[in-house]
Image (cartoon, rainbow, N blue to C red; front, side, top):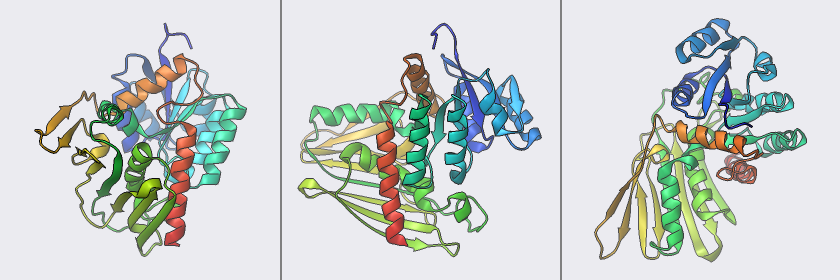
Length: 323
């Protein structure tokens, strides 16, 4: 794509997260919101007015076919990600699809196949990996400052009112703590420790059948481990700690969107590192996708398709153990 022109974005699904994404898109140097779509025309028009989109539609098909759109951000409920991503890809639209990418590995494989068949960009919206804080931590670990990584712990939990028809608890909407928030601790383990060779998990099920709480223990070559927890039943620290043989890195509460971390080395003063933060944090993901499109890339080097496949495969196994 020509760098003299801004990347034209469409937003499919006009809910709360889409609104935060649109607010950060307004801060982008290289992108602009061109259109949005909701099955409720009044909601679509209201969203367009609030976020200065020139076009709005009451069908997702109309957005996917719109010639004034280069890339579409999909922000519909989890169970629709697969269907809506394929709709957009078949119309040659680049896709940034909200996490979780889909509901299971086979759906992710189908999405990747359609993207490759249409030679079109596809990325899971795991925005955490695009944050300056996480990139800084990766560089610190590569430098060897905290030694060899041997353990990671991460949790994400809040107490939600039980409603079997809500997106959090309804199986038909892809509910459960794992898919909604447990994906963040699992992503951190995959990012910093790679694929495990053994997965052990235990879940507490809600009356609707989805996991209300989920504990996961991952084992790696060399007896390295990761301990992960997600819950819709209690408030947790939402913290991530990465332990090395020479020290550790602590990402404080709401680690998935933090702009700071502390490096702890025995015998030395703790080092607090603060990084940039623009908007809600989606800004960095947006600019990353813009740059990928300018360069003609078909997938993200930060969140490659193979990583999305590994992430879903891991979550499939956790849910399988929960039966």
